[in-house]
Image 1 (cartoon, rainbow, N blue to C red):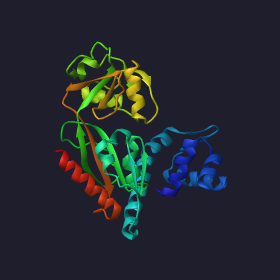
Image 2: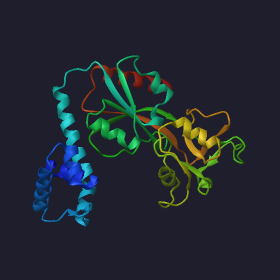
Image 3: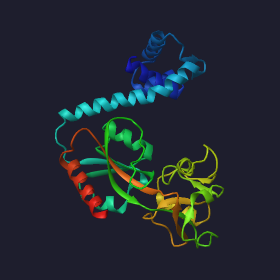
Length: 295
């Protein structure tokens, strides 16, 4: 399957327009039409309806494969490009918001770093495709267990921080005086849905072991990456939030430790290729040193 044709198909399907896909890709509309016709001819199936422009059932199935296929190709190209790349003076670091642990921030060089916050599911892809030199990604795991990351490319993951979790709620909440909470007792509570800035609710359901879509219903959805806003919303009574204990919480909030199940908030450093060099190697070394000191 020609990846150029596949990229064109993905663009048309997602934009629902041949002309808009041509503009985004820098092709003529005639070239886009030829690409789609060639791909349909190769597969022997219609992939798009034309009026309106929309994927057929076969086209929908191809879209399920296309993202991971194209990502692996981009990752392979970036991996090979590192062999010929000159040593860099600066580095780009991408991080999920909760991965910006105080200890990891303290390890950053004072100059030469570009730091970008991304949704946690986008961090591995950014590192694999060369959009970033390093990534910091967080998640919930059993103590000392590695995070379950999407298989986008061969990446090296190193633990850099691990800390307890706590439930954030208003200071006058009936549960605020507890010394610990069991997640199983909170399935019917009202929760904040903040997938990019907090612990996603589907992760709580998985940790609890309940069926998909059961329990941990959202009272309010926050679409942003500011962890402080999540804590402030929880303190104001808009729903519970599960956060690492190092997350800053306002004075009006109570922070009750999660006692069961045994889970921790884990942060890992991701890099691609072989042994890192230059500023990347130095940051890896500094983070590894801090990790050893914090054990």
